[in-house]
Each structure stands twice: as C-alpha cells, then as structure tokens.
Image (cartoon, rainbow, N blue to C red; front, side, top):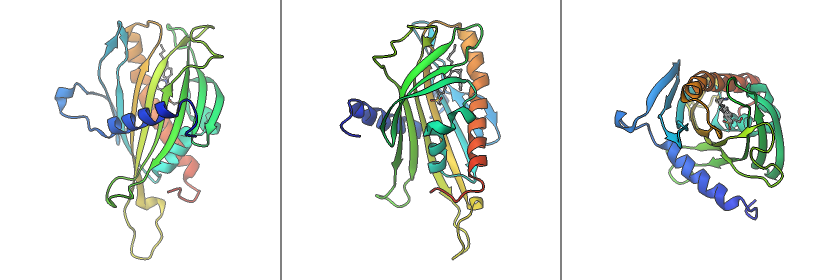
Length: 240
Ligand SMILES: CCCCCc1ccc(-c2ccc(S(=O)(=O)CCO)cc2)cc1[C@H]1C[C@H]1c1ccccn1
C-alpha cells in the first residue's frame, strides 16, 4: 500500500527493472554472452566483479506455449507454491504481508559446497502494466524481488552469509486469435518471459565456483519453474 515505508523504493525499482528487462541484449558489443540454451530458452550473462566478488548480471529469455504472463507471475509471486518449484530453498518465511501485491520474504538456501550457506531478505511486488494507451503495445505482468533489511534479522548474525539480489520476471502474453467466434484455448496463447537477476553472493566465494554454480542452477531453475506453471494451469481456466 502506498503508505508503507518501502513504497517509494518499490515504485522506483519496479520501473527501473521493467525498463531494464525490456531492453534487448543489444549487439555483441554490450558484453552479453550466451551461456545456456535449451529449446526456446536462451540465457545470457555479463562477467562483472565488485570488490573481487562475482556479481554477473543474468538475463534469460524464454517463450512458453499455453500459459499467460498473469499465470507465470502469480505462481512466481505467491508464497504457497514456492517450495514446489524452488529446489535450492531450505526455509522461506513471509516476514510481512505489506499488501496483496507486496510481501517481505526471508529465505535460506541450501548450502552449496564449498561455499557457506546463504540467506536473503527481499520485498517482492507483483504488478500488471496494461497497455490501455496504445492497443498494440505490450501487456505486461511483472514480479520484482529486491533485497532489503529487517531490524529483527541483521545480516550475517547466524550461520548464513547474507546475499543481495535484484530479480525481475517480466512476462508478455501473446494470443493467436482463433477462428471468428471460437473461444481462445491454451493452444492459442504463449508467454514471452524475460528473467533478469543480479545476485551479490555476500561473503567471498571463488569466481570459478560461483560461475559454475550459476551455469548449473539458473537453467535448471527456469525450466523447472515454467514446467511447474504449465502443469499447474493445464486443466484450469486461463488467467488473462
Ligand atoms: C555461494 C552461493 C551463492 C548464492 C546461492 C544462491 C542464493 C539465492 C539464489 C536466488 C534467490 C532468489 C531467487 S528468485 O528469483 O527471487 C526466486 C525466489 O526464490 C533466485 C535465486 C541463488 C543462488 C545461486 C545458487 C544459484 C541459484 C540460481 C538460480 C536458482 C537457485 N540458485
């Protein structure tokens, strides 16, 4: 709700991330390297370090048939489904339900040898950006996750190293209009998904270990999550 202390930051970060996600990958001069490909999914990263720590920005584009952007964002945002698809999650706590479209999460992720275990606190906001203005403009659904602090959970106070992240899941639904007068079915829809993330791993971890870990985990994560949405929605009415 607009009265919450985080609201100004949420507005700023959501608009910044939507603009970033909508940018193409530019020409090869922009340093984006394709590092994973699977069917319609293409995953790119840029090699960047801050204070000797790997903080490679990641951008993935995936096109999935039979689901809508609203459905993808619904299953990504809603806490009740997260253990079903987020395999590296050890513990998830909703610290605060700020509004029906905004939550504050604490997550601990499974320890990945040889690095120490990580945790993260982030606000998560789901937003529909309709294209009322120009009909043929994109109709966008998005979820933005952005690290924040919480007075009851200071960073690095327990066994976990606190990580920092900004994630944007941006979805655009495409409808191939069926024959005049026939209802739209899941065969007539597809969703273009852009997943952007920047993860600062907190404490130091070897660049080679982190890059190998991301190379393995991110493609698995996006494929598993999108398959999960397909399975959850296949026998349900379409959520436009
Ligand atoms: C040395 C360890 C480095 C950090 C480990 C770690 C922690 C959190 C995260 C992470 C946290 C949140 C999100 S999300 O998109 O907001 C969804 C909600 O869960 C996504 C990924 C990633 C990784 C890195 C494993 C890598 C990895 C990559 C994709 C999936 C799982 N793990």
